[in-house]
Image (cartoon, rainbow, N blue to C red; front, side):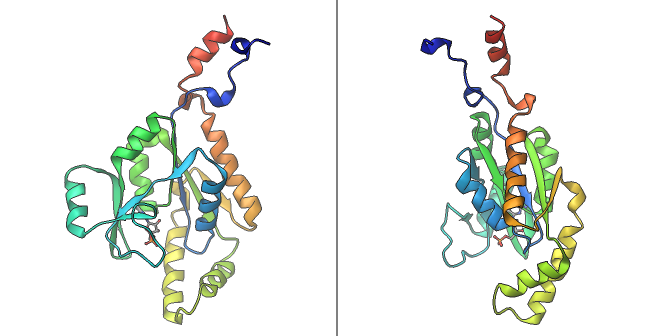
Amino acid sequence: MPPDSVPASRDQLQRRGLMFILSSPSGAGKTTVARSLLENDSDIRLSVSVTTRQPRPGEVDGRDYHFVTEAAFRRMVDDGELLEWAEVFGHLYGTPKAQIKAGLKAGQDFLFDIDWQGTQQLYQRMEVDVVRVFLLPPSIAALEERLRSRGSDSEDVVQYRMARARSEISHWDGYDYVVVNDDFDRCFAAVHGILKAERLRRARQTGLVDFVRGLMG
Ligand code: 5GP
């Protein structure tokens, strides 16, 4: 078959990127699922947030977060440079607008590790581009065990995290998909399946009209 008559594969069709939001109470496995998605799917990359909190050991400026002062953060808010922002644990976090808007147009998907407040704001502003996925732990006991196994936190810290986790769980109904993380492989397959299916939504496939026109001769 001559090369010009090989039908364009689905992957070659132009499409608009999507904003894939993964939220969960801490301890429900979100970080592991997010990391695996980024490692196993080359079309999605992390949306790097701006934050006023200090870097933790091992975190790299520009890769994990853009670490900024509170004054710089407030300036970004005033100048309309953030798509959404929220205060979490006493620090400010936000999503820079420019990289996302340009990326979506070019077909780049973004993964968001943001809380429910940011999720609501992004959904209000960019509804058609947003896919919201919430991970639940299989039980409260499993969540508590995971939070305890993280290290030497005092009982007070564990209890504080549990209270916070319960409050985060209460926002489950603001998401499009809810996955119970009782088994990592199954949970990852479900989340990746959601991403792959959402890419095929007709409205995102901007190259479809021309493709179908070509099919019809
Ligand atoms: P951490 O400081 O542990 O990296 O993140 C603390 C919390 O802030 C997490 O719940 C995370 O999802 C949330 N977060 C991180 N970046 C953003 C952001 O850009 N916007 C919002 N709304 N929340 C964020």
